[in-house]
View 1: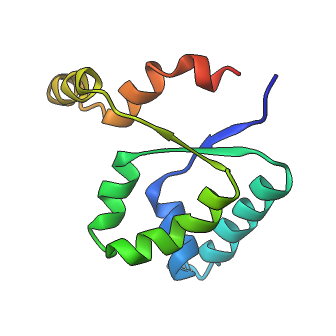
View 2: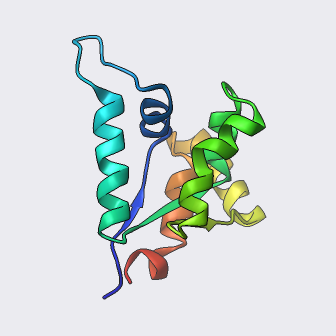
Length: 116
């Protein structure tokens, strides 16, 4: 079995980059940093897709996004999942029918990566 794979929600990336705290004062940025350190130390991998970049692009410019991802890209921790046109169309259809997200379709069609 290969190394563990993670798909991190955009909020975890933001918590880390902005060193955010919850409304109750919990150090979300530290929790996110600890997670990234654990992933690096254990040689785990992080899956990401264009959806992460779209979501980050709402609040950050291209340089900030590169700064956020660069070390993990250089360390070969990140695995980019390309979104096919068929997956995008299916996700759009399902989101209208059942309020499912593109991520759901992306993960379903990448079971061979997730199971390794």
